[in-house]
Image (tube, rainbow, N blue to C red; front, top):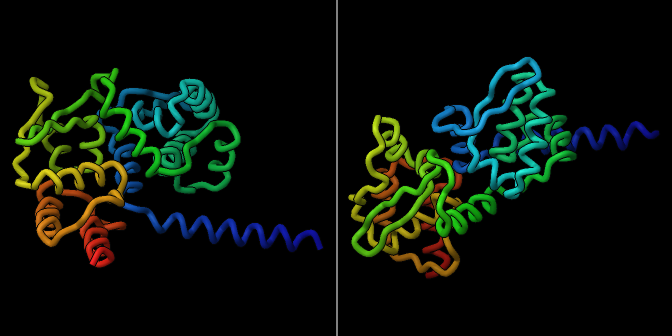
Length: 244
């Protein structure tokens, strides 16, 4: 009779696995793309067969709760895994999606992984906006506007905006860390864009107007944002309806 609880557990696990696998948000998709593209990587790991896997310190730093010991534990895990297993581990760490259930629960037993992607990104938003980045590939990039200068880690712009990714990839000599914003968004609309870039969310206290919706619609195309689920434009429309 003991076999039935095991079967139920496996059915629930498999169901959970497929629900998560096919429900990636654009933030999670962008994180996985960032890892797979291998652009602007600045930390490397060696698998059990000696293959090198490159990753991004900024993402690992916050996904592993800003704890250097956790990165060392991850290095130990990767040193005992194949290249396929290692890539799956990194994609799960970047996105928190259960791509390989056995590996996922194995690493969860060893490293302290921040489970909520949105919370991870909000922490980057709060901390990296205040502090100087240590690594050249993560250094601050300034978007200058009439009202204010906005500071982003380069990696976040590369990950979330194809406009800036294309710009950074096309520049062979980095002579400047700032650019003027030509999106023509109002300051309020740009602040919505800034917060969404990190969190996939809109702040509760923001009041949405039709003018903001019209501006953001143009801004989505201008910044070439990934608009799958949740769609920024739909979030704005829903919030606007709920306010009125």
